[in-house]
Length: 331
Image (tube, one colour):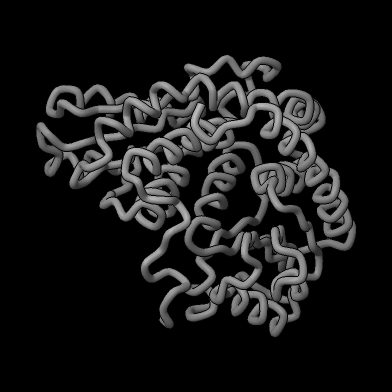
């Protein structure tokens, strides 16, 4: 497989499992001290991870959670944000301008900030009140933050069992998923690498991922033109512009929103020749209980899409690291 080392992948994912314990300790301390509201604050890719967690949380807990775009929060404010609010952030670079400004804004309000910061010694690593530092492990962090807060509030009684399965099996599952999706990803990339426009559809806890993949990978890293659309909204506008030769990519998960993507899939097959479906149900997920499969759909789909990214990079001869404007120009 292109750019793939199974042993390294499993070892790296296993090493980052310590993110779970570090995050649990912080959430427990916050809960013991008390809080009024929780604000997940991000921008670009990070807010899409927060949308995924919000979709997971809403059916199982009434936690006072708000998900806010960092730039909009600073510009517009939110009356629900006060000195007892906990702001939760995530930053790979540790210096995202809008997130830095949001943390400064939160501190001016007297609030505390918890952050998963991948780059040690970065500005945000030094600014947050509670720091989780690891080079990888973003999903471990977000699942733990979300479900630990819920569990501590008296919700999600299956927390310990779910986390035990995650820690025991997810590193191997992530490798298995990448291997199983390599051929479908290669075929997709070869056929559609130069499509003039692609529509990416998701629902429930995969809507955020569809938005993220369209924006952060295809647009930012490959300069491909895309439109991401929630399956719930597809029939209120987008259906009218899908043509026979357009490309529709559907990310299907296993949460309660699955019927929404199935409805889109059934319809687009009647009007479009190029419908590609990536479905978490296609993967075995050995060791994960059936009732948890829908819960881990974002984790699984992100792994599956790593192979799409690698093959798009190869087919388009466009390294994923290249940018024209992002962090190249002043804006």
